[in-house]
Length: 490
Image (tube, rainbow, N blue to C red; front, side, top):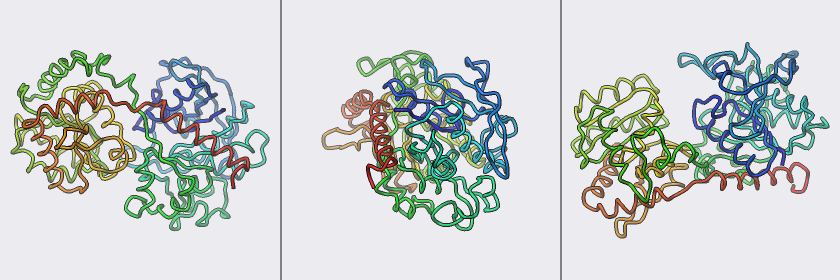
C-alpha cells in the first residue's frame, strides 16, 4: 500500500510526547513490511537541521488557506535506518518557532491557522509529488482537517479522489477547539458550521470534523476505544464517537525495544536481562545514589516517571503520600508539568529525608535508570489512552502499579495472590485510599512473597508489545478504509 502519515511531531526529529514515538515507530515498521510509507511533518524551528541528511525538493508550493494562498518549501529526509521519505513543510511564520504548540504555558493564538495550513499542505505535497496515496493517516487534531479536505476540496482531484483516510485519536483531551471566527482559515466556509461537521458548542472543533469525515477512526488501545464512547471519558465527543462506533477500533501501541532494552541499554551502569538479573541490583544502588537516598538493597523502590499533570492523577497521589510514607519504601519522582506539582513534589525530599528523591524536569539517562533500578512503577492516571511507561517498566522487570484505565488495563495483568500469576498491581478507584492500599499490597508481596515477586518480574521481562503486531492491525484497518472509500462496503 501507499501510505501517507500526517503528524505534527515524529520521533526522532521532534517530540513533545508519545504521539511522536508512535508515528515514528509505526511508519518505520510499515516500511519494513514493504509498504510505500511517506511522512509529512512541519519543519519546526526546534528540528536540528545539521543532524539529518536533508535536501530541498520543492522550492515553492502554494497552499490554499484563508482568503487566498500561502507559500512554503518542502524539504526531504528519511526515517533513520530506512529509505522511507519524510517531507518537512517549511513556513517560517507558522513553524519557525522553538516550541510546537504553546509558549510559557499558553497556546499560540494562531494555532487554528497554522494547523489548517498544515493539514491542507499534506494534500498539496502528495499532489506536487505526483503520488497518489491509497490511504492518508491523520494523527490527532493537528492534522484532522486532512480527511475533511479529501472529501471536499480534493474529492474530484485525479491524485486524491480515491485516497481513503484514517483518523487516529492519541488523546481525546486535546481536540483543537477554536472560536468560530477562525473558520475562515480552514477554507471550508460557514456551510460546514453545523453539528455534522466543524461546529462544537458554537465553536469549531478540528478533531470532531476529522472523526466525522474519516473513512475509519482508530485510537491507541481497545479499552480506550470503549471509554471514549462514554460521558466520563468522551470529553463531550462521546455521542459523535458512538455514531462512528462501527468504524472505530482500538489498536494497542507497541514499545520501541531498540530504545528500551536492559540487555543493550548503554545508559545503565550495567546491563541485565531475564536470564541474568544481577545487574538490576547494581542499577538499584546507582539509582539510590543518583537521587540522594540511602543505599539499601533490601528496601523496595517505587518509581514515578510522568508528566506532572492532572491527567496523570498526581493530585490524588499527593493526598496519598502521607499514608504511604510510614511504609518501609523509597519513592523516586521524575517529571515536570504543573507549577504547584513542582513545588509539592520538589519539596518531598526535605519533608521525608532518606525516603523520597525528586528530579523536576526530564532527563533521558535518569529515566532509564529509574526504569532499571526501581522495583515498582506507579501510574495512577485518571485516563491513559495507551501509556508507554508501563510497557517500558515491564521490559526492565519493574512491576507496574496502575489504575485500570485505557491501555493500562490492556497491558498489565493483575497479580493473583493465590498462585502468583500476573505481572502488576491494579486498582479501580482513583482515591488516595486506593493508591495507598495498592502500594501496600505490592510491598507486602515484596516482603512476604518474594518467590511470587521473582516470578512476576521474570514474566514481565519476557512479555513483549511489538510494533509488528500493531502494524498488522493497521494494515487491516487501512484495507478496510480503502474498501469503504472505493464502495465495496456501504
